[in-house]
Structure formats: C-alpha cells, structure tokens
Length: 243
Image (cartoon, rainbow, N blue to C red; front, side, top):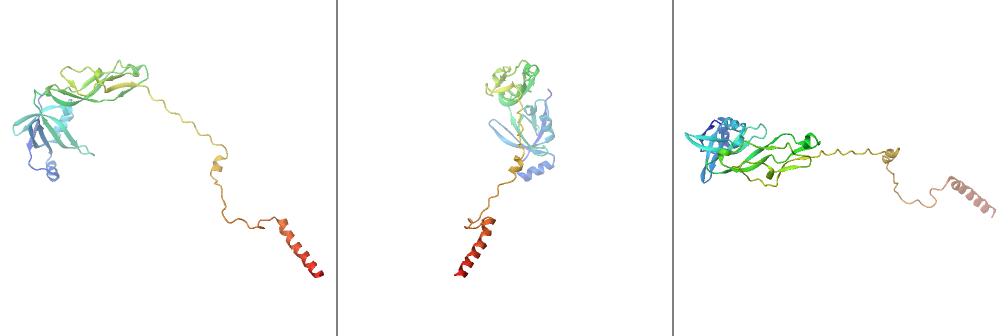
C-alpha cells in the first residue's frame, strides 16, 4: 500500500470565530496528540481527510501528517461532521509508535449465506457490526470476515467463535453475539369486530335524564280526573242553594 501523506500546518488561534475563518480558507481545525506528548493544534484539508475515510481501511488508516517537513505517523482518532450536509468540521489525530500496540475498532463483514436462510426460512440478524481490538499500528486489519454459511436456524456465532489472527487481541467480550439466524415473526391477525345491527345507532343516542323538582300532588293527573273536578263543584253549589 502506498504511503499516505497529509499536509498540516500549526495554528495559534482557537474558538468559533477563528475556526470559521479557517474553514473559509478551505481548511478545518484539528489536534495531534499521543502518549506522553503535548497536544498540538493543527489545520488540515477536509478533502485529504475525506479521502482517507473513503479508503478501504477508513479511520484506521495509518498515514503521515506533514508539519512543515516534520512527519508524524498518525491515525484518525475522531472527527466531526456537519449534521445536515455532512461536511467535515474537525479532526483529531493520534500519533503512534510503530512498535507499540494500540486499541482500535474494526468493522465486521459477513461472508456467505447461512443454510438457515437458504433452506430453513430463517432471517439473518447481524447484531455486532464492529469489534474492539488491540494490535500494532502496522497490523490493523481492514475488516474482520465472518463466514456464516454453516449457520442453521436458531444458531448463533459469538465473538469467541470467530477465527482471529494470532497477532490480534480482541477486547470485545467473548460472549457477545455477532450474528444469528432467527425465525421470521408471524404477522398478528386482528379479528374484525362484529357490530350488532342497531347497536351503533343506540350507542350514538345517549339517554336523556330530565332534571327538576318532584311533581306536586295532583299534577300529571289523567284527563278523566281533570273532567271530574268541574262536576263536583257544580253539585256542591246546588246543595248550598237548597239550604
């Protein structure tokens, strides 16, 4: 693999206004740091960093940061992007020693089609997509390939099941599931609600409760009772006249 060199320049100013002016020049702010070394503010081209991120090794790419003729062997430790447009805003570089191991995260790549998917109707569930490892900077793998061809329905592969080169130490817990084949979920069928004829109409007509004082005695009598009252008064009047 050809050696990658990224040109960088030291920067003295910091803060939002200084970073805005820097980006106006087509550069982004960054820092270089390492074990037992003082942090150094720098400015780099976002195009150079973007090209590294798009490479096969991505952020684990080992390259030279050229500071005025002084080259430092680094990897891209962290970076920030603009939320909407995805433009690079900041980058942190970790200076490494080629004879000392470092900790990095490496992507997992699935190889093959599980028998549990091919012939048993299962679904492949990719659970853990990257592993944390420790190795020398020059031995960082592009990816960790996992062959799932023999994986049956209901079976899984854990970190402890993976074939890892001897020069690499996996720091992710051995019991962590990387991939498994699961049965597809049955769709829940909801039975239609039966509506009884007239029930909907009845439900839409709430009972009306009449409020008011209790009826006075004599009120609400039938028509026959009302007709009897004038005759009774006429009879009493005639009896008085006879007397």
